Image (cartoon, rainbow, N blue to C red):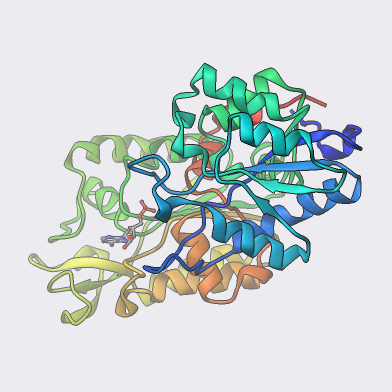
Length: 393
Ligand code: AMP
């Protein structure tokens, strides 16, 4: 279902309440280490400003343990936004209440206000009182926070029920590109799944098995599948209680005519450490007491060849323990294969998005999602509450 966007409504002179995702990584001193999420919201903000809207931004940052914890305030995000767009951003010290209302009602066309971290209130509870106070600030609601769209919170869902609500450009891009891939993909359609746990990806695998031509599985989760095939996997990650399910999923792949490929070789280590002894072994020969921490070179090549010929690729989850350099090769190889692929290439958020960014391949793929959990739920085929609440076109 297509959603209405900021382009479909008249925003001139209106107070437009915009939910953005400024939940950026920071270092120990609170300095922003990656401002991609802030940059991603700029097109919507600039459009609204240029249309003469009064832009009231709301965002969350982390999980504050106590209200108004100075370390959890969003001043730095406001400063960074102001730098990027070259306009003043008036950061307020609260997000609801009389003082905020006075400032908001005195705004002029084109002004930008950034409200304080909504998580200082009961945002995550979709608290009706808080929702109403937020909604009172705007006449229109724009949701541009795809990364928070899988949650039915006051600032993502509650306000959308009280105000005319449309998608921002980032939200539109995320749901269009990923939605198209799921609804109407150019074939061959290849999905690559990795990461630690099968249990986190069951919904995604089940949904994708009805749509893809080939499913590549790497990362820690692959070992539960290898076990289900009857292989010995040494000390590799195993979800004992998911072995049967893994077998069922492999059977379903066969009956659905989907090629499900597992690692044919692995980099195994004698312990989980950066300086562990390591060697390459076939999946049929993983020694007891060793653990698989990355896909091996033959698997890299196998996966890269499948990706090369794909017309649509979706990737979620690293191929190994990529945080440790000796086990990052598989994840790098997949990132590189996506960068070289001429089809539509989509990287789900989280670790795989970080890997693509770090390796400098972000501009060489079609889309890097800004939402980790949200993109996973989207790929599961779920309706995201923050999206569902927006007006249909
Ligand atoms: P996820 O959050 O499920 O996408 O998983 C990401 C995590 O999986 C990363 O921290 C990786 O280090 C970890 N991971 C990937 N492959 C393996 C593996 N073979 N063994 C243990 N952990 C892994």
